[in-house]
Image (cartoon, rainbow, N blue to C red; front, side, top):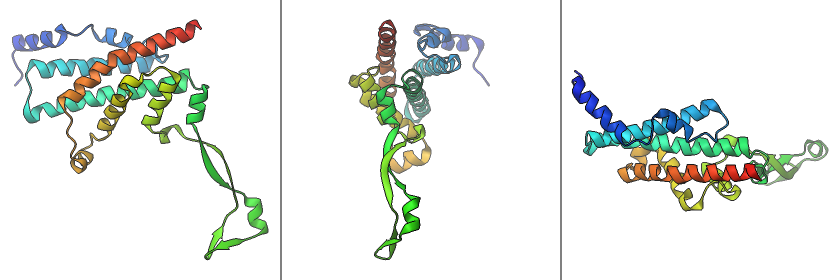
Length: 216
């Protein structure tokens, strides 16, 4: 049976009291994103992470009951960092030398013409003639850490909090029960708070950088 209306109102007012604005305010923090739909999803994720944090505080959750609150916040914040960095790299800076380099790796390519002319073996195994050339790396196979480092080199992510952003992403990917059990990982309140504290300078840095780039 739900709490009575008065208690529900008190909890709701508490959760909203210290937030800097409503969901539209949170969406506006991502105004630099040139995809309206993505901007809305980012704003909603940011707002929901803040609301859950205040709800956790309002009802003074502790012990095992605090785990889902923290885990949800880590997932939301890590997903925001990932989506923003990935979007900017491939939308705003798709032709930047750093992004082009990020998508390139060296790979061996067999040369079929030589294979028809001669067969070579080494210890009973066939040797295939190859050339070593640049190949395109698919976006999904590029690690998030490499994407963050690329964003740093371009200039829209600060090294000061880059390691934390990478760690949030690792925590999010370990949020599956089997991974948590295998690696004995426990998300902590300090980690979710740190993910929140890093968000403001992260967004401010991007807004200023993109604004200066536009002016130039």
